[in-house]
Amino acid sequence: MKTILVIESDAIVRESYAETLKSSGYNVIIAQDGDIGINMAIINVPDLVLCNTALMDVDGFCVLAVLSKNLLTSHIPFIFINTKFKLYTLRRGMDMGADDFITRPFQDNQLVRAVEFRINKLKTTIDHSENVVRMGQDKIDNVKGIPNINEIILRGTNRRLKKKQTLYFENDHTQGLYFLDEGCLKTFRLNSNGRELITNLYHAKSFIGLGSLLLEDTLADTAEAMQNCSVYFFPKRTVLELLIDYPDLNQYFIKILSMHLRQKEDELIDMAYESVTKRLSKVLVRLNESTSPIDHIAVTRYDLAGLTGIATETVSRILSDFKHQNLIEKSGSHIHIIHTGNHQIK
Image (tube, rainbow, N blue to C red; front, side):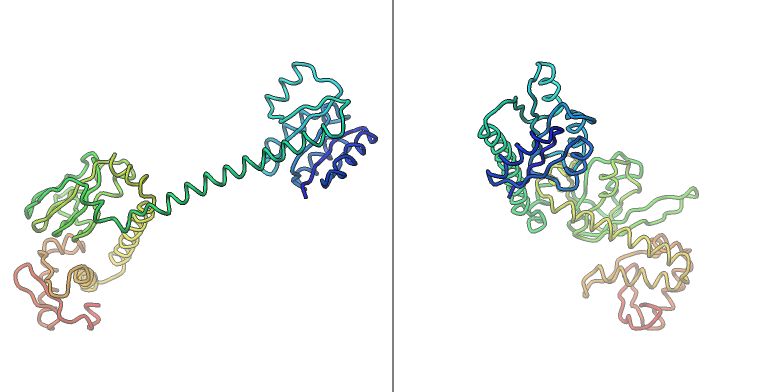
């Protein structure tokens, strides 16, 4: 049953409206002035408000102004009633968002028809809005980027990098997003003494440059191939179009950034509290987990020093210790972890 709020100062007129609407199947609540009417509207949230423009304290225009600014009541159809409406009064009410104006005297059925029309119109509007939202949600649900990620990646421009070749330099303007399809790549920064500090190692099937792209900032580091690589490039505009066409990619990229953030937090804690041996062992384990079981880790002691913040000579000494303990096998720059049970390695 729909509820109608009647705001009218004249008790006889107020009861007359209430009786007419009740006989037509409506639930009616009444208020004798504007202040009470506003409070009742906010508390009860009726389906329609019927209000006299000339109330004893707060006039009908003030009531409409207050209700139209309240999130609970701004959607409620509002009908003004008065014995006479001047042109400027009609214009004022329309500008404020009044839905209809009824001039007294009128027949009971005129009042009922006006109320029914406004309530039905609101229902039609709500139904249409829900259908639009539902259609939009269906479209989003039916367009999934993650299952089609391989197909999406092939839309990019492919580039081959040889070992030691640079993909981009620190402070370059962000042009787009990179996807490392094959190979291994490192990103690094140089300190004031020219020492290289590796900020990340990327293995096959990794996105690169995502943070700088979304921040619309310059690139934070230099990217260099550690072995022959195959990289796909997506211009910034293409990435934005993909995020619109495939909404689930937004969540996918957020997950990637969150994982990177968690990794950096762990590295900071290790730098602050762990021994150099423990720091190096954790890096080796992480690198080992990112390669297949039959592969060796191809990384130089200089890269390990850059990853851990440890002197190159110290890295060499710790690797020799691991080798003597039969924890790793080492041949040149290739390292193979043969035992991870020891507390030094894991």
